[in-house]
Image 1: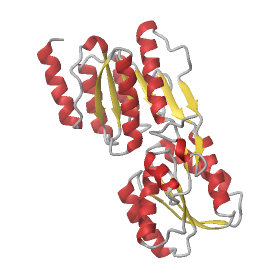
Image 2: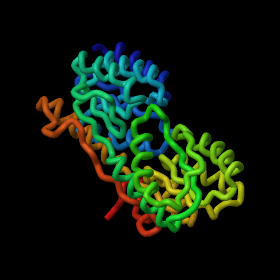
Image 3: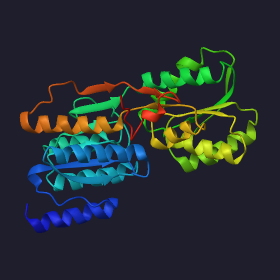
Length: 313
């Protein structure tokens, strides 16, 4: 592929994503596709993958799909046209993504998924995800403890098309539902969005002023809920999130949000790149396609050791 062609493809990627990729030779290019970097979790994924890829000698093409499966499909076309050697992906829908990953595979480009699984096996080379069920149980156990095993609470759900939303909710309820004095009075999706969570929390609070706690499917929604609670003068409400973001870490240290669950986004992305490198060089990763990484509870005891979705010793 000549320089002019690569330049045009890079310009196309910039137009789609607003992120400036390096102009790389097709021989050593890794494409990194994630949801919007407005969410610090997804930004950490992108940075982790980009940093590790460059350490291993690759150039990178960084793109965002904004949880839009159609846009994601276009980005796959861009990666394929660019002659990428591998794609690192946090996908835009468990069902909708299968065809794009298959298309890349048919073009000889392996995909390495992080954070979210797809509903097909043998299409991606790796699917490296947090043990969302295990993590949700950790968060639920802490939530029940903070609630004193009693009281009315609300749950903020993630995007319905995301398998993690359902897994986390199941993990929460398999713990919380064992306590008969814990009463769920509202359960609503805020689509992983801080802005939506603020609005949803306002509505829930108006309908349920006696609410004692909120358990959230991710930290971004937890931050939105906490902002709405603070605006209403209800800082007595217990809020627990999921992700391990720096924003929630800071809130915990300030006595606001009470806990979250760390999923190692940065390390997951690095591991995906390392497996891509191994596959490019040898034709095998040496590990199973499906891989789970355990989560860690973050509360006031260890929040000071948390930085960019990683916990120091």
